[in-house]
Length: 391
Image (cartoon, rainbow, N blue to C red):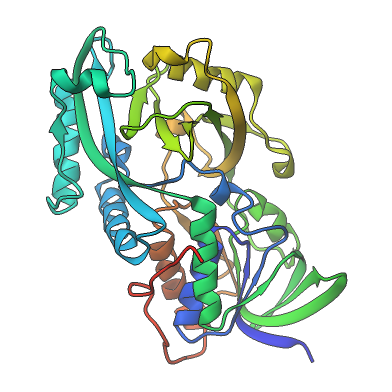
C-alpha cells in the first residue's frame, strides 16, 4: 500500500522547506522531494540579503515592505547565527537619478514601517568619514545615507529550516526526482524516483514550489492544472578578490538607474545582481560574459581601487519567476502568487515568485489557503518561536 501524507512538497528551496516546516508545526504529515540539493536553484543564488525591501517603496508597495520588515525582525531573533544586521550605505552623487530628498523620504517611511526601532533608523554619514568607506568614489558625491538591513548565507538558512522541519516530523527524500502525479477526488497520487527505485505515495495536497521548474511539474500532473503566464529572469552575481569591510553599499548603475549591491562576502566582495530575460533550460543557467562585465564596470565606477585589479574568483546565476507583463523586470511586481487547481479543497497549489526574507510568512499563507483540503490536526509548534541554528 502506498504511503500516505497530508502534504507532498516538490522543491527544496527556501519556500519548500519553509512550507514543510509550517506543515509539520501544524501537526501534518509532510514529505519534501528535492531532485538535487537543498537551495540548489534560486535560493542558493540570491544576493544573500534578509532585507525590508527599501526599493519597493518606489512602486508604493507599503504592505510588502511592512511584511519584509516584520519577518526580518523575527529572523534576527530566531536565527542570530545565520542572520546578522549590517550597515548599508546609499551614496547619492550629483548625477544620481534619485535625489537626496527622495532617498531621505524613502528611508523615513522605511523607519516608520519598521516601528522606528534601532534596526530601522538612518543617518547621514558626515563628509569627514567618507574617506573611510572602502575607497568609495567621492568626487561629485553629495550625501551618503547609512541605514541597516541584514545579510545571511542563503544555503545555510535553507538547510537550517529543513532541519527544523525534520525535528517536527517532516520527511525529506533527496535526491528524489518528481515523475508525475494523478489527481483524484480527494487528493493525488505522486510518483517519484529515489535511490534508483520508483515510488508512489498519496497526498491530500501537492505543493509545487519548483521555482523555474514549476511549469514542468504542472505538465506532469494528470489532468494538468492551469498554469500561469510567467517570465524567467536571470540574476547574476560576481565574487571579486579583495573585501569591502565597512558594510554593504547600494549603488545606482549609471547606465540604467538600477540598484546594485556591493557587499562583503566571506573574504571577498560580492556584486549583484542583473536582470536578464531567460528562455533556455533552467538546468543550464549560468552567468553571461556581458553580465560579468556589467557588474565589474559598476564596481570599478564606484570603487576605483578595483580598476584593473578586480579579479573575478567566482560567478553564479539564478532564475527569478515574475508574472508576464510589459516593462522592465526591475519594475515588475514581486508579489508572491499562490495558484490552486480548484477553489474548493485544492489538490495542487503552485507558488510563483517569493522572497528569501518572507519565506516563513509565505508558508503561513500557503497553509491557510490549504486549510479546507487538509484534515484537522493538533499543532505541535509555532514557526514564530522556532529558533534556527547553522548546525
